[in-house]
Image (cartoon, rainbow, N blue to C red):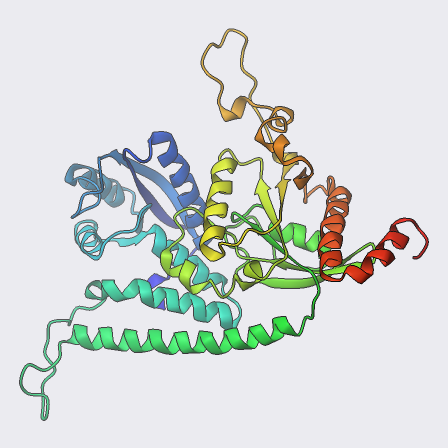
Length: 406
């Protein structure tokens, strides 16, 4: 799917564009653009400039106003920028008009995420899901991908109205989508058999926003080497490992991270990957507490989980990266209202987090802080689920906890 490849070079310069609207103020737009810059870096581009404009709603023709688009064009030309990325999804009409005006490569947040997923996909399952999402995204945008769309197919046997090239291309894409869906059904059946073969072991799934440290935590708990790095979507394929804590075995899965404005095409395509979440007995929601908008990230994850599975599952909140948490104390003579940056970690623990009681814990997977306490918490939760499922094992657990058996 070359349509979505940004560049093999790591130094491609990019400009980012966002809108200030009634739904998102300037602070929120800056947060989104910071995340978009991280996405661009993950894809191999270097964000050198951010543009934003205040509008009630995106301009239907050019997303931003003509004056702002001209300002972006001047910067792009003067600084030899080859890529402009918009924080919201562009319509085919907007995409076509912006490309015509700027004469450089144009991506929106959705196509950028699709590009990253395409690069990160390793297994046949993930590759098929990404390709399906790409074709779904491409379908309404075929008009910009070809230059020969309005020519009629001619020749012997093809006289009359014929079929436009656009219709041909659309039919080819629809056939490809149908074939990919069939491939996914076959792969899902195979994975379903694999899950059944795991028996009745308790299943625990790590969930959370992207880049919060799930894979690092997975490596600690399972003593494995799951790929982990400081990039968005480092893990696409769900990894399942057998973990044993105090002679109690259970299955631990590391799932793909969520993100704000996750493309609908990806949510639909990756629902099968998230079967581990649906079938889990216990969810471990990992949160990067050092991130300035960690509360919003929690909301995004909870909303996505509700889309995947509307059943309520027991959950543990694991606030990770306490080693990276920082706060800025206010001066005594500063009378402005406090912001999140002014709240120390100990005070955060006394807010809404305190109501979670023993369903939350604060750790650092990187520094291995409080990992043993987390293992104890997992042991107790898994044990209760195991006893509910197999009541006759309750006596054995009592003996083990009392030290009568090893």
